[in-house]
Amino acid sequence: MKRTLPLLGVIAGLSMSASAVAAGLEGSQVTITGYCCVAPIEQYRQTIPLTKTVDSSVEFPDGSITNIGNLTIFGSSVDVSSNAIDIVYTRAGRTGAGGFNGFVFDFQGIDLPIQGVSLNAASTLSAADVDLGFDSNSVLYSVPGVNLAVGSRVVIDVSLGAVPIPEPSTYALFLAGIGLVGVAVSRRRYRDSEES
Image 1 (cartoon, rainbow, N blue to C red):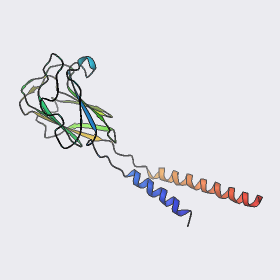
Image 2: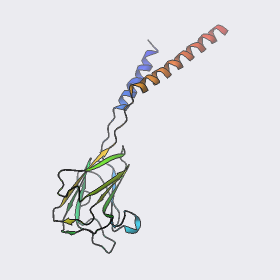
Image 3: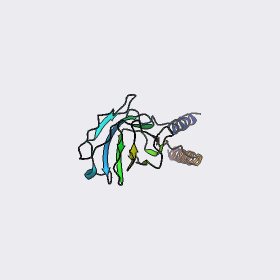
Image 4: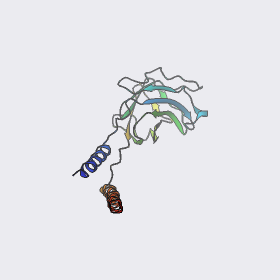
């Protein structure tokens, strides 16, 4: 019975760690940077990067994003929640054409990697107008050559990766390994007791 209890503790610990879930984006640091009109790289950066903590308030209200380039960055209010980015435009106009005209959102302090992004049905722009991309800690949002009206809205759903839950075969291999270690220890004790 004494040998069974530690083994049950190990199995219970593995079960609890496998069922952990992400807290989402809330509490992480997000940096927003605007680019135009070729690619989201430094030479095409049009705004000063601005970093905020994701919480229940609007992280980037209209006027908080500062333009440094010679192009006008359309006014917008940007709110990041635990699983979405909500962009509402406050001025009308046409965005610049080109390969990339929009924002990059870089996240630090998220528990799990970003696994996907999609356009939410609450958006007033269509999927044909919006280009989305992502990597493990960034979301890329571009609207090249799009007519924006006051109140145009884009909601980006952000999916974070799930903690992988081990396959039953993984548990079986783990238990078999523990069993082999137990057999080896038992043989060694038996051999040591016979030599004494």
